[in-house]
Amino acid sequence: MVSEEHLENLVDVISELVKADQTADAVSLLSTRHPADQADLLEELDEDVLDALLSAISPDQAADIFENLDEDVRSDLARRMNPQALASVLDRVQEDVEADIVQDLPPEQAEQVLPLLEDREVVQELLTHAEESAGGLMTPDVLTLQRDWTVEETIEFLRRQKPDSDQPYYLYVVDMDGRLQGIVSLRDIIVASPAERLEDIMSTDVISIAAGSDREAAAERMRHYNLLALPVVDSEGRLLGVITADDVLDVQVEEATEDIYRMAGVGVKEWAFSPVLESASRRVPWLAFNMVWAFAGAAIISVFQGTISRAAAVAVFMPMIAGQAGNAGIQTATIVVRSMALGELGAGDVFRVLRKEWALGLIKGTIFGATLGLIAWLWKGNESLGLIAGAAMFLNMFVASTTGVLIPMTLRRIGIDPATIAGVFDTMVTDFMGFLIYLGLATLFISSLT
Image (cartoon, rainbow, N blue to C red; front, side, top):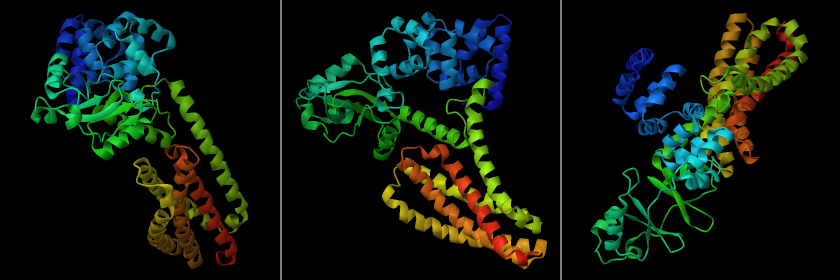
């Protein structure tokens, strides 16, 4: 991997070579790097330098780079290429990557590129599967063996096919109709007698996944069973393709990124250099939603305006009580969302998780409630204010423990991705309850505060 400092130096050198009409030298320098490092370099170049460089590199080199580019950058580059040049590059990348790129093209450009592709029928078949499904993630290029073949026939078949080195060492056995029957490893074939049939040495306990299943389910299945590859089948059990470990790694990175973006209220397709108006259209509605709830919180405070006017010191500790509980609730919600995503937490576990979080709430509430109460007493010189602030912090920690568990699980139950709005709802509830508990107690004991 190229260091950040070395990457900047290479970017400067390549840019200077291109601007000095020495593009061939720039291409030669670029070719000395690993394709993944080449992709990093291209992502840092100015558009005019990048266009000049892309027009000069060979389709084979461009294909290697495209397979290593960030998806958003790759889509942007593909859109700027003419159909013939793009098709020449796509013919050299893996079919699943090829389909992903075509799917991200504007419709009119995709219609121009598709007829030019050598394996357009395979790409069109992949495009029938939803992008977020296992079928949209799979590679259709998979070797299949017949169950009645002998080991000798199988070895001869493999010699003729010369399978690509990227293919996993799993070999799939199918029947005459292409239905998945079993799995056999290269080791099993090598050590078996030449006359043995595959049906006698294959394992019939095959872990597979339906093409329509969510790609997250595919990633979780591969992680759970520690697989290098996962076969994808249709509704009748016919083998359609295979999902490999590198595909799953990409999915996990993308899904984690999406969850982080959603929790922050940022578009899942946004990146650092997205157009300003495009970024604004994704972020402003989320901030507007937050602002509505901020007004609701302000309305609660206004109900107790009389209490605050009589004991102004009460207002000093409101942000601490609401903010600390909000942070605690987000901690809990994050753990719950992750546990649900990994399949570690189901609906039947709600009370067990609540008991654990309530115990944590007791600990956190005692520590921070006592700390706040003592500080409030010493700072403002009012014992009653310290007791009220400490009690409000203690109670709101229990609210945070409860909402951190119930909100994500309820959202999942009604079919909403909890990563999207669990944090917002949790903060909203802890703010409301924090203000209500604290100002309510202050109102009850206002005589001791003035």
